[in-house]
Image (tube, rainbow, N blue to C red; front, side, top):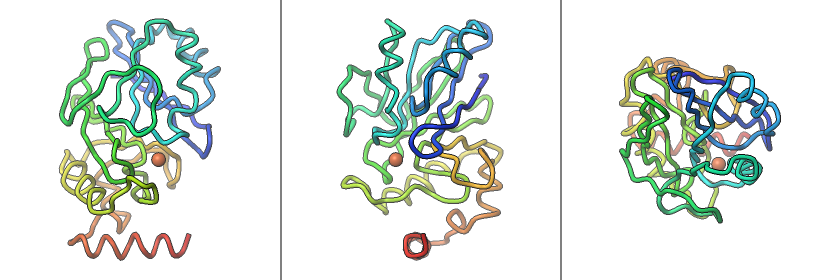
Length: 213
Ligand SMILES: [Fe+2]
C-alpha cells in the first residue's frame, strides 16, 4: 500500500491518500484538507479514487467531503455504523471489518473515546495505522465532546492500538507532535501518555495535560 499525506485544513489536519500500486485504486482517509493539491496528485499519478474513509465525524475531519463528492461520482464513504455527524450516504463499519483498496487490505478497528464513532484503519501488511484523533505523535486525543469517554479512550489506546506490532507506523489526524508520524515503539518510549500502568495513571496525565495547555 502506498501513501501520501497532505497537511492543512482547520488545525494542522492530515489527509492521506492510500492506494494499491497494481490497480491504482485509491482511497482518501479523512477529507480534512484543501482538495486542489490532492486532486492534482491523483491526476499526476493516474490514481482512481473510489473510497473515502472517515476516522470520526468531528467537523474538521469531514470539512472537504462534499467537495470530493461533487467531483467524483461513484465514490463510497465508509465510517463507523453509528456516525455522530454525517448527512451523506455511507457504508457503516463494525469493529474488525476488512475493506479493500484494490488488492490492499485495511482493517477497521473501533476505537471510541475521543468520540463514540472513532475508528482506526490498519494495513497489517505494511504496518500502517491511521489513528485519526485517537492517537497523535506524543499524546492521545482529548475527551471534550459530548460523546467522549476517557475510560473508552484508555481501552482503545491500550487494548487495541498498543497491542499491535511495535513497528507499526502511526499516521495521526493532526500534526501535533515533533514528527508527522511515529512507530508505536517510539511513541511508547518517548511519551508518558503511552506508558501508563493503570487507568488511574492515565487520568492523571490527561488531567495535567488539560491544566497546562
Ligand atoms: Fe476530533
